[in-house]
Amino acid sequence: MAQLNSKIHEVIVTTMADNGEAHSAPMGITEVNGHFVIQPFKPSSTYENLKNHRQCTINFTDDVRVFAGSLTGHRDWPTLPCDKIKGRYLEQALTHIELEIIDFVDGDPRTKFTGKIVNDVTHAPFRGFNRAQSAVIEAAVLTSRLSMLPVEKVQQEIGYLTIAIEKTAGDRELEAWSWLMDKIKAAGIEL
Image (cartoon, rainbow, N blue to C red; front, side, top):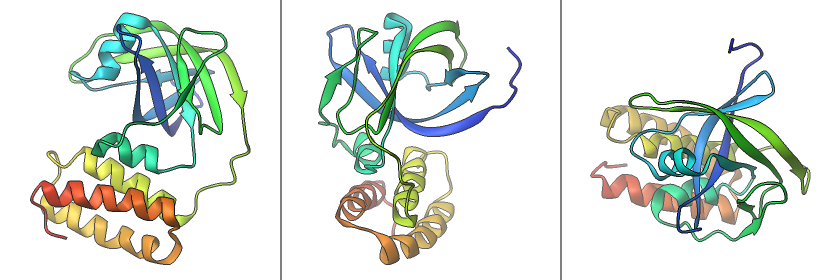
């Protein structure tokens, strides 16, 4: 499939485990020609769940605590049953899209799952991210890659992102930010 008109979205992907438990993880996914491409790292719960279940939900949310929480052990976010697939979506999703996986290319270290839209539901309008929300998402991406990045790069990026937190963060953003900073410090990185 040619990659025409592709866009990357920072979302929460909710998959189902064999035991029926919902697993939500932050991920940058690509929208290509009306389909979504999900490329989880191996090994991961998202990879195993998609390989076994072949359905998932894409959640668009402005609650950045979900992004930070997934990386820091704060994963207890309520879900609701999907309408068209055997899956669940985040209760606080502004929009959720139910996908059926139609193609699977097993790769290393990442696998490519392509999903077609089965159902697309808007629950509330998205009014955009403020700078603090964007900073939390960027810090979450950094936190997910601590073992791959030089310490100086992490410190430099966090220093810059802190400006947005100090100027525009509300309670939810401050909570998410504190979780991420604790995780970074626990990795031995001085901030």
